[in-house]
Length: 291
Image (tube, rainbow, N blue to C red; front, side, top):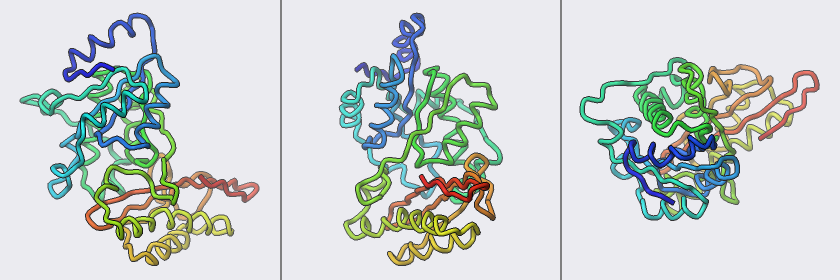
């Protein structure tokens, strides 16, 4: 695996593959790679001739009160993990390579970026995400880019700007990877104490409560959200939000029909955690498919 730190070096390294008509897969990450990231790299390895993993803690998506300085960093460990999963290139640029002096452009995605994470973390969060991912798409020019379903709203924002800006990349969203007890893998899980780790199960249990409510015939979004909140209260966790929304627009849904995304965010100790699940209800048969 080759390590590159500049856009020029990345493009030079990819030039032979591009000239040969080979497919390029990109896995954008902020490092602290866990099994969720590794599963994305494996998926990219299975589907592409060349795999690029980017490693960049993006300051533009962190708010003034968020954990940029404390965000876990382990470049050597990340490089070892990417290499083990078959990555061909690790692109690990310094901040000044991504945001050089005089940088003054922002990519803003209206609508889908505004509720939930946008409301909680501020408009600058998804502006920072959209801007850096647009740059990564232009830097690597991949055929496919891989993202985790845990960041469902982020993936929706990326799909939207890629479509709106005619960026020729397929945005592939891959399933959430969980611990055996249901906790979604996250780099921020490292912040949890033993007791907080136990309480963090409130998020996955809330999703299960929502699933159970729908499986029992519930279709009212407010009642389903209430069941999820009750499950979280049992572990003394107060959510920032429990929302039932359209998976593409992230507009709220009052009644469960078709596909609905149940999205949850909560703070447990100093860790801010998110999780989600999609529920599909076939209106004709009233059968619910849960995933």
